[in-house]
Image (cartoon, rainbow, N blue to C red; front, side, top):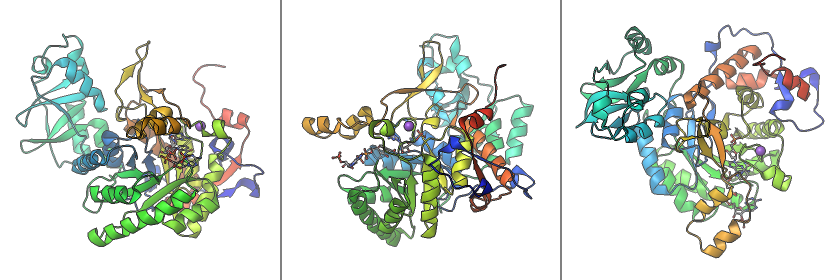
Length: 485
Ligand SMILES: NC(=O)C1=CN([C@@H]2O[C@H](COP(=O)(O)OP(=O)(O)OC[C@H]3O[C@@H](n4cnc5c(N)ncnc54)[C@H](OP(=O)(O)O)[C@@H]3O)[C@@H](O)[C@H]2O)C=CC1
Ligand SMILES: Nc1nc2c(ncn2[C@@H]2O[C@H](COP(=O)(O)O)[C@@H](O)[C@H]2O)c(=O)[nH]1
Ligand SMILES: [K+]
């Protein structure tokens, strides 16, 4: 990346401070862009879902990996729960959506609470392994919530066979005027296909491990028995291990990383698979080099940009994210390592700018909180708008959860330090209520960005991007106008 007109910025910059200028391009189609990352995680899109309890769980993990990204399960989740999450993600189909299945005797009320767990808006009714019908929100809307599913389900089953090409699924659904269909392999239900899903599987490549299963990562903190936790996580079958703390450039991190590296190397000897280690967070070249030296393959960059994060207001500490990414990515590159740009991403442009700054992948938390796939229950505001609750991992809510086994006195001491928001309502966008809708927007924006720069791949983009500085009026000029002046 170079600054426009050779400018050397006199102060640190964040995403809103900068813009990219187009340059002559021989990339003639946005489909010619390859967004695969080289950070060793197997992702085909440079997107990582933040290790936050309100955002990253099983549904998020399988959905994002199916489209090429990866989700990181937070450090606060008990290891047996992480292991079962990993098992279920690895068992999920790489092409078809996982169906919500309900027995025919389930109440409509219960079924309606399960349907929003998937963006496709329907549950498949299954008795004794045999699919009998489909029930949607609309089917359940007008009836008593204690009615049973078999009374309202659509039994005029339209199913499709597994193994067809995406176009065939799309056309079959379109010609039958169906939004979705259960997919059967022989008699058994293997998934659900929607028109959009079929379209997406022709555009995205799932992120898979060497055995062809969807990828997933998990985080470990720097306190407690780091060795045992790291070993258990590796044994659970994760594809990247994230060593996570607010202030990554500290002695405890420098002590924890060699331990995690030893466990990783031992796991490689046992299994033949080398699992990358990500660690953070830091915002300086020094911090990057020290973490890489201590064992990190990937360094997580970002102190204070996160939407749930109060660190900068509480402490005055942090660094505008674009400059932090730029400096850390250059340092990482000089020693053959990678960075993830973590936090503060609200628009596709921010993802593009992080990649221009040299990030191998971009971590997104809050933006993905308001989707069907985030773990929380769907709630409704006074105006009926659906939302999910989100909270920071350094909020009193998260700290209370993380320290649940500590003695009362210790708990109270730790609760003194709070650097995150405990409740925030993240509304679902009615047009884009699923995380895949957001991924569609991001990849459309980023692919287009690459063609403006004349780049076909991430390294080419980081090399060719020309970045200028703008005032807030410049930023404002770029915003769309949804009503008249
Ligand atoms: N990217 C960001 O800007 C930030 C992210 N977070 C996220 O919040 C979660 C919790 O992280 P964390 O608070 O580190 O909790 P951890 O449970 O990982 O504990 C952090 C350890 O580091 C010590 N420590 C020393 N200085 C600091 C400091 N300035 N801030 C925090 N800990 C410090 C703490 O000791 P002691 O308690 O005795 O001081 C404690 O032993 C993580 O998921 C992290 O990524 C949190 C804040 C900022
Ligand atoms: N200072 C804090 N940072 C936090 C907290 N919880 C998460 N985070 C960081 O934010 C990013 C996600 O950023 P977003 O803008 O996409 O939401 C996450 O990966 C963490 O690094 C917190 O409580 N305090
Ligand atoms: K912030």
